[in-house]
Length: 109
Image 1 (cartoon, rainbow, N blue to C red):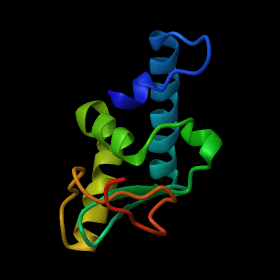
Image 2 (spheres, rainbow, N blue to C red):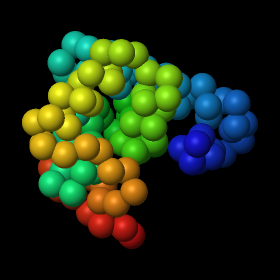
Image 3 (cartoon, rainbow, N blue to C red):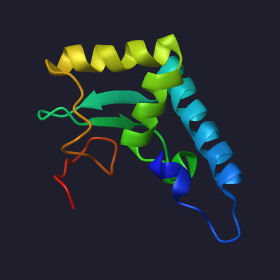
Image 4 (tube, rainbow, N blue to C red):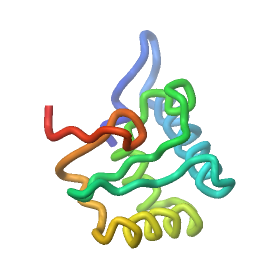
């Protein structure tokens, strides 16, 4: 996954992969407790609101979404499904995205 490749100075891919796993676990726990909310933009982008930059540890919403959909908890997947239903559209992780938990949305850089 791309977020596995954002290595810090002197960091191995295995160390980064473990950081990404921990960040996605924090996100899933936040979805379960209600401290993190999944949001879907009018164009179908996914965002997770309620995590600090430190808690995210460089993991993008799109990367977290892909990890959750492949191997995440049923509760996290259900929270994403609920966000899709509220937005009236499915997630389209190929287009628009957010850097601030869904407060604003951006097209490709």
